[in-house]
Length: 438
Image (cartoon, rainbow, N blue to C red):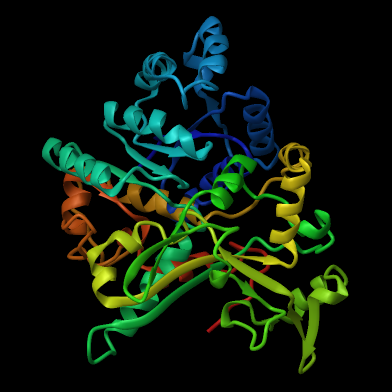
């Protein structure tokens, strides 16, 4: 297939990286994209286009080419109001729809702030194209089920894939892959615990002071992750907690015994160890058999990390404990609380937002290509690519084959096979520095 129109919304750190990798991966995927971008902040678009041109990856077009100047000015104001104003939302939809109808994308990738879902999902449904976002703040399961039923009845091939970032997203795909493998080996058809731990730990641990952190996505998303409710399964029951309450769910490396999720992490790659050795502060590093250890970690529940898994009857019936926690270098969470108490947090987040650099890799891109390889109207096959078995059932009681063929709502972990995905992510050269764990 050639010149497949794809629209990428949001050209911040994540969007910029997704654009770069989409173009870099074209030859490997044997597809040619006609990539369009849109960001209310035009300088972000310009940086993305200039970066692509400098790296000689191809040409990116801006959706602004199809939006009159006077309406671009109106849009910039309207988009700041859509979270609270239905009228602003409708006006924004109308302006963007007119532009989208000029490019007729087969896929919209939303890398904008999480609340933009309410804008771009209706647009994708109106122009009958697939949709992917990076997640956070999903609608209730009852509402998602209703949308799934509507898409199935319409049978126009619109596939909505939400929560397709790192966590929720890749972490859940890998967790489900291991869940399936273990479940097949159990005698009673149950699993005691599925635990996910993910953290964007900086190479230079002095970064951000005692926060030891700089955001890899919007500060707004990070605030939501920390302030929203974290849903888990404990002893077979749904529980709700948050990052800064209910201390019994925290994991700290200064306790005895050290909780499994925050035990020192061994760097087995000699090259990565050498790079990190002079970047990790002494209190955050140790040694074991001449290998570097990352230590002094902490983990706490954060919103949306378990994705929809806790609400899916399949996991409720087979898993006693299902949890996600975000890893940080201590004392990150205590420092966050202190900054918020003193009123300094807002200024710290503004500095972060102004100094986000560009990433190089995104598993979201492989998900996007998988959808493009299985467009509406084409017979799907899971014998190649990254798909799960086509008879895999979604949380809404439909097969993967049905969703691919008719359209519907599907989670990334219901769509992609974790082991296949990991093999693709670890192809030599795709990630410059990587430590493989058997």
